[in-house]
Each structure stands twice: as structure tokens, then as C-alpha cells.
Amino acid sequence: MTPTILEKKTITDRLLISWIRCRRKAWLDLYEENKHKDWSAHRALQLDHQYKSFSALLSEAPNRGIEALKRGSNGVVGLRLKGIGPQGLKIEAHPPLLKKINLGSPWGDFSYIPVVAQQGRRLTREHRLSLALWSYLLEQVQQIEVKYGLAVSIRNAGSLDIQEIAITKKLTNELFDSLKRLYKDIRKDVSPGLIADRKKCTLCSWKKLCDEKANEEEDLSEISGIGAKRKIILQEIGIKNLSQLALIDKDDLTNKLSPYGESHKKIAGQLIRQAKVQKKLSPERLSSSMALPELNSAEGVFIYDIESDPDAHHDFLHGFVSLAKRKDGTWLLDDVKYQPILNLSNHTEEIAWGNIKRKLKSHPNWPVLHYGETESLSICRMAKRQGEEDKEINIIRNKFIDIHSRLKGSWVLPVNSYSLKEVAKWLKFEWSQKGSSGAKALLWWRQCQKAISQNNIKPKQLELIMRYNQDDCIATWKIAEWIIDKK
Ligand code: SF4
View (cartoon, rainbow, N blue to C red):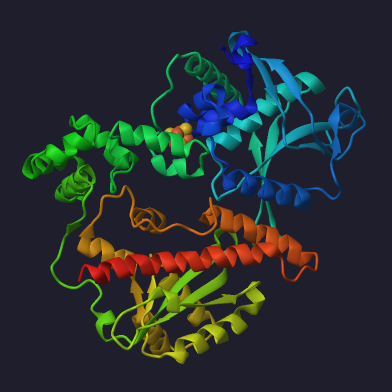
């Protein structure tokens, strides 16, 4: 059945935003059944950021609808704008906020400009074209040219970045061109291919569906070590999928990659090995030496994982699992003890640091296992901020063992990514809270902050974050344990 949007030849701002992110996403939004779509925490995080940014911009709550616009409210939401675009396309949009400015219109000595919340450091094409679309439709309502829009973003410590974005002829032309191309794409019977840069898929609610397609088609992006650029290069030299990469001779691939630079050339053998392992679904050892020799003599280990708010550069939870080795030299996960050390605001870092130091000193010879370089870097930076001597920081740094780096140095696994989630999933580890993820933990944290600001000192989301953090620690141990078992 043809979706209504095409019958009416109407394009919405939501569809345009989807298309800018990924052409395939716009097509799936229109034609694919919603049961294949997963809820994504990123949309909720985006709305949270938008709400905070708009609240900081306006001195009072915005009003709703066309009447609010006509009577000159400072901020207006809930308005549906309609108009005709290129090729007679009907366009509809719901700008998230219109802000009053002192420029006359038929309604009085005021008119409006659109506002977009800019999440992330960079202003993107999505922000610019959204502003251009809302401006184009708004001009038809208020009968006055919209010369600029605003991109706003709440930053650390509540400061608000405000940027004026000029709505130029060139930008409007780019918008029209995009609308025409979007309309052409969504009239096709088959969906566009997967996006080249599949890192963007982590934010998308169609990820599971597209992962299945990538897997079925043996898409090159499914191979660990192949990003958007390398995929294009491999396609250019005639390698279209995982099977072809697994079969090619190493010298042949090295020669073919030479014109693209040293970094691609020297990785040829690694790519073929990874493709072979993923093809035969069986891990391959890289080195006969022990990957974790420190654990032979260790009486126990700490497993450590941080939860952070990247926008605020704030590590709000330091989770430690303590695991003592048994007298018979074995490790048993039943013996774990979890201690969450909270750092609810950057003002409480001194207390958190005191607790972390006490924790580390409780077993001064135990190594600290973690997954990825973030934990070690963050704790050393924290120690520095708290005035520790370089000598002391070095002692702390030397306790840390990055399981991710040891794993990659000693094994090739049949996984498309060596992230904690993918490797632990391959080992059949399951997080106790279904659908949990880093993005969801961040959303819980934002909800916690709101609850704490309303004097709820023990919000329920804090429990959820701690459970997630404990699971991350246990997943890290599961990987370490697998390495130890393989000797
Ligand atoms: S999961 Fe990736 S390829 Fe699929 S629609 Fe989303 S962004 Fe595009």
C-alpha cells in the first residue's frame, strides 16, 4: 500500500532530517513496519537537550499555536507550517520553537525566526537545512523574509551558546535540491543501500534490521577495522564483500592498497585475517605468550568501569567490582563485591577521589582491569586535578590493565567490533536489564539530575545506572576470564 505521505506528495521536516542522516533511513521510515524499529535513547537525549537549551533561551514558557504567533508571544511552539516546495511538492513542518524578534510584520512591530537545538560541537547540515525549511515556510505565514535562524546549545555549567545562521539564497537552493532528491529516493521500489559510515547506525532505530542485512550481504562494513573510507577503497579495487576479502592473497591486496597510502597498505594482512576469522566463525590466536601474565601471581583483582556525561565532561559513577582469587588458585564470579563510588557533581570530586584511593589501597597489589583506555586516562586526570604527585599517579597508572588492548594484541575474534558489548555478547554474556546501553545510562543520569534538583536524593534511575555499571564490570571480567582460560 502506498503510504499517505506519497499519495499526497507531502514531505515533512522529520522525513527530511531522516534523509539527511541516511537515505535508507527515510525510505525505511516510510515503508518498513514499525515492529522492526527499536526504541533509541538518542532521541530522548536529544529532546532533553532541546528542552534545556530552549528553557535557557526564553525568560518565560512558550505559548502554543497560530494565535500566540499573532499576538506576539516571545516563544511559540506547537505550530504546523505548510507550503509548496519545488516540483509542486507539499511540505509540512513542526518547528520546535519560533522566537520573536523586533522586525515588523503584518501582525505588528514583531516577527519570528526559527530556533534549532544544536547537540554536539559542530553545526551540521541537518541543523542548517532544518532552519532553512522552517524559514521558508514561516515566510509564507508572516509575509516577511526570514534572514536568519538561531542554533542554541546549553553547555557546561548552564551557559548557552547562541549562533545566528544566515538563511541565504544558496542555503535555500541546497534545501530545494535536497527535497527533490529525497522525493526521488522515496519513490523507488527498493530501499537505498546501507550508509557508508556505519558508526552513525548506533544512533538509529533501524540498526537491528540493517545489521541483519549487512550480515546477510556480507557487507564490508561488518568487518572490524573497515570504516566508511576503507570500504570505498576496497570496493574501488574490486573487493565487494567479506568472502572476497577472506580469499584474496595478502601480497596482492598490499599492492592494490599501496596507491592509497601507507596506513591502508600495512593493514592488508590484518584485514584478511579478520575477514577469514569472521567467515569461519572461529577465533584465532595471534601470539603464544600469555596475554594476562599479571593475573598468575595476583591474589585478586578490581574490575573498574566509569559512567560519564560526555557533554559535561563529568564522570559521575566509578564502579568497582572486587574479586579475590580462591585458595586453590581459581576465580569464581560468585565471590564478587560491587562498590559504586558516586561523584554527583564536579564539586564532590574530592570526596569521590578519597573513596577511590581508599578502595585501591584496600588491596594495594591487586591490578585494576578495565575495558578501553578511557578509565585509565580519566582516573589519572582526576588524580592530577586532586593534586597527587606524578610519582603517585604513575603507581596508579601501572595498576591498570586494559583488557581491550590485551585482547586485540593476542586474539582475532569472529566479531564485527571489539567493543565491550559485542565481545561480551559473543561470549553469551547478557546484561541484566534488557535494552540497556551507554546512551540509556546517560538518559537515566539526566533524569537523575532532574530528580536530584527537585530534592529527590535517591532517584530510582540511580539504581538502574549502578546495575548497568556493575554488569559492564562483570562483562569485562568475562572477557578477561576467557583470555585466562585460553592460557
Ligand atoms: S541503521 Fe544505519 S544504514 Fe540503517 S537506516 Fe539507520 S543509519 Fe541507515
